[in-house]
Amino acid sequence: MLNETTVPLRLTLPPTANIDAILRERLTSEPEAALAEVQRADGTWESVTVADFNKQVVAVAKGLVAMRVDPGDAVGIMSRTRYEWTLLDFAAWAAGAVPVPIYETSSADQVEWILSNSDISVLVVETAANAALVAGVRDRTPMCREVLTLDDDAVAALVEAGKDVPDEEIERRRRLATTDDLATIIYTSGTTGRPKGVELTHGNFTMTALNTVADVREVFNGQGRTLLFLPLAHVFARFIEVIAVAGGSVLGHCADIKALVPSLRAFKPTYILGVPRIFEKVYNAAEQSAAADKARSYFNWAARVAISYSRALDTEAGPSLWLRFQRLFADGLVYAKLRDTLGGRAKYAVSGGGPLGERLGHFYRGIGLNIIEGYGLTECTAPTSVNRPSNTKIGSVGTLLPGASARIADDGEILLRGPHVFRGYHKNPDATAEAFVDGWFRTGDLGALDDDGFIKITGRKKEIIVTAGGKNVAPAVLEDRVRSHALVSQCVVVGDNQPFIGALVTLDPEGLAGWLVMHGKPQMTVEQAMSDADVRASLDAAVARANEAVSKAESIRKYELLSGDFTIENGYLTPSMKVKRSEVLRDFAADVDRIYVPAADRQPATAR
Picture 1 (cartoon, rainbow, N blue to C red):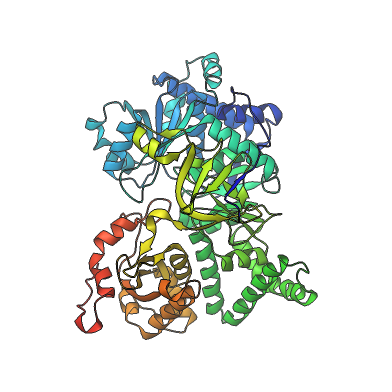
Picture 2: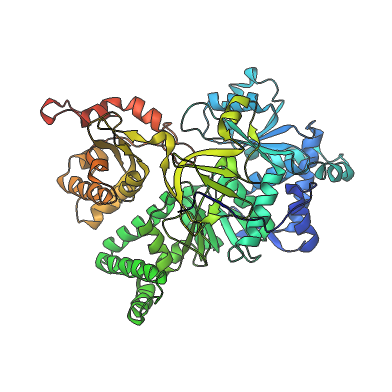
């Protein structure tokens, strides 16, 4: 096993490079190529060329200048993922400004903190509801002079405001930023405490994006299409937005996750950006749909074939002729329909934000969708490592991208260094100093490097559970395996200073409905399902399967079902779908206690 590795840069850039230059390069090389497609009210998609997009960027940038946004000023964007988000992002860069994302699900306190901490002068929100929330904190954030609303034609208002600003002023500003200058401040969604503002430079984005394009040509080959539906306020989607422009991909946007499937079918992406929960839900929905059509046995057989086929790809002999024949038959029966759900053209999916799990990784590769799982953090401009289509180890998060270095500390923590690593936390020198040791960024993640340079993540340093017997347990592997069950929405493993490991589990209402159909049972509420013997037996089996991945001392002995779920709206999930563990443990302390109380002494659980 290695304890340190470095991958050299493929490309170096002059110090004058900035994100806007990536758009200007596209404008020079292929002005009439499609940069984006925008979905209209009637459901059709309208192409936007590089030249048209650039013209819109300049017009909106002029509006920002007219509203007294100076180079280096912060401009806020608070919206779901839609075309105007990308337009505003590039317009802010063209004006020499620093775009600052705010999740549209943010609370008033979070909005107030970000506005005041980053000194946002102009804020563009999506809806009247967003504007009303901001209005409630305006008296405490006087630096925010203007609030515009996309649903009230904010873009048109900016264009009108800037009609007298000369083109030369935008041309001047587009060349001001250098690689060392601040490009954006992204506030961590924060599983604990107040969000910290991560300062990412133009060099962070340009060096990482252009080197990734050069290194992963199978995906970013100038012919790609991708539909963004994850929040652009998160670094993962934001980086893909930039790399799509750099790599010649056509960008689409989907603001409503409920409309994702029809949007995917209409847009037909060649690669998809997702988090593991998305791929889990697609699999579970396909399984339940097959059960409803009395074809569950066919689906289960096809799933086994896909997994066996993918595993065989990693052997020297490769898949046998018989396995290839079975896969061909299963493709017409199952796989083609599943690929059609994702648009029909997708060959690759980029997965991040958490471990996907080997079973799903092999399943999707077996059906013809190669999920290239990667690893990174906001502080690393999203990616640090990724599996390449031609060099994949399922279960790992791949090898380093060009320019990155990784070291495994004595306690197992992953340390990183390279041009993708941020310069510090905004107005927080103490947190910045704490985040680095001898020039290496401390990720807080635990992992290992194999002899081929592949990274495997084993858990979060701060989430390690120490039982009363002194056993150290990383909860992630158990949580991910339990959560992959169709009935389960979330799982939080507990057991600090306790005699054994337990878990809090929430049911997925959508998954429950499909599971009941699949098992020929009448529909029931989540509360009714909690006491249903068949539901309990299925969950017991899911926990038992999860326990196969760990030792007996690390296994889940008991679990407690909660009647509610963890959501972004109730504050238990971050916008990037991570559980706020500390808040769950605080608010559900009584439920945790019930796990460790003898059955005879238990009190009924409190409904939530």
